Image (tube, rainbow, N blue to C red; front, side):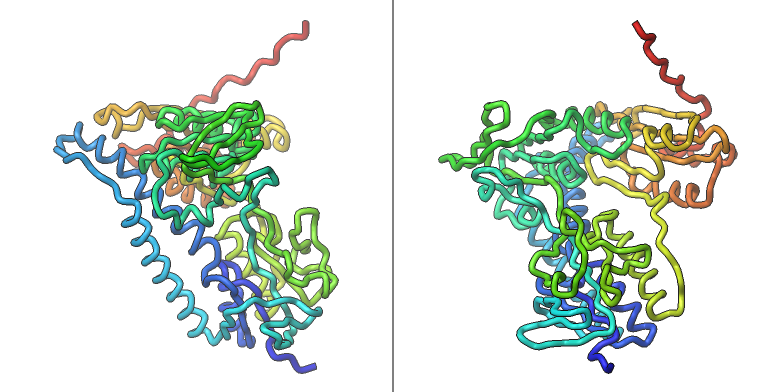
Amino acid sequence: MAYDYDLFVIGAGSGGVRASRMAASYGAKVAVAEERYLGGTCVNVGCIPKKLLVYGAHFAEDFVDAKNYGWTVPEPTFDWRTLIANKDKEIARLNGIYRNLLTNAGVTIIESRARITGPNEVEIDGKRITAKYILVAVGAWPMVPDIPGAALGITSNEAFHLDRLPERAIVAGGGYIAVEFAGIFEGLGSKVTQLYRGPLFMRGFDQDVRTTLADEMKKKGVDLRFNADIARLDKSSAGVVATLNDGSKLEADTVMFATGRVPNTGKLGLENAGVNLSWNGAVVVDEYFRSSTPSIYALGDVTHRLQLTPVAIAEAMVLTGNLFGGQNRVMTYEDIPTAVFSQPPVGTVGLTEEQAREHCGGVAIYRSTFKPLKHTLSGRDERTMMKLIVEKATDRVVGCHMVGADAGEIVQGLAIALTCGATKAQFDATIGVHPSAAEEFVTMRTPVPEPVAKAAE
């Protein structure tokens, strides 16, 4: 059968764009449909604009710290609209780059909503288009809790386009988006309360990372409240009133829900092709990203594996190489580094201590906390935490974790070491860069004492 396209991609985010370009480079005839914006979440309402806002928020501390370094700094003022306008210009520039990348690769761009109508068919604006393969790369969407008055709140999507900086902000959630926006709002001058329904946020991260970040955020002025959740929202004359699950009330100008993201598969028509979905709407795929319908594939956040832009891009490289490049590869998800651009930031790669104790048997833990050199003059009460987890049987470093300035930059190099199977002896044999925070990872020599179990009474 002759198809209109070899590959039809639904979603022009990081994974969809890379898959489209790479498939075209192999000689495939490719089209990509996008109903919102080229670049997807990361470029438009995710990684890039969020990092720009983090940069903006950090200037507040830099102005203060500069005084003890001899700088006379006039009282600074901040204009939210200037930051947002400049951010929007940069995003528009990136949108144009994505458009050029696709066009120059020979990919047909269709800026409209696509709906799957069969195993090899999609419908766009009433027109049927056929393809040998269909790739679903529509990402995920912020989840809003089902509570009375939820419509009075916003999500991260809307946070990038607020008309003004809120004087009082409530951030509900305990993941990376929640802690990042709590830091952004606080740094830019908002009074911030962050609520998390559990006893400690950042679930899934190493325990030392979680406790250290909580301590440092509190020092910066974020009102962290654990075992707290919003039961309802009501409009008030001065903003929004949040009634918590214990009956107490908080008033704010803005309430932001950062309570998770769900695969964006609604109304996509996957049922028309017999594609199996998991309990949360994610496309169920095998190790080759193939769904239950052999002609339909999915990758990135819509599969609900690791919601990271570089992961979606790597998956796209593997998939297109297999489909059109004569390869037979599978994706590995071990030792994938990640950064949380909280304030201070988090960098992590490999196993947490809890995971290592479960899967590696005996482990040695190396941990260091210290005041960064910069703050010996600034006077700021901020501490950095670094941690190595070593498998005793092999001496292999299986986890690296950091909370502190430049954590995201430092952990990238550590990820290379872990990918190469580096041992603690090799870390020890590496000469550090002095003076730097990063050198601490190659100078930790004494493991922390093993925890002693409490004797049974």
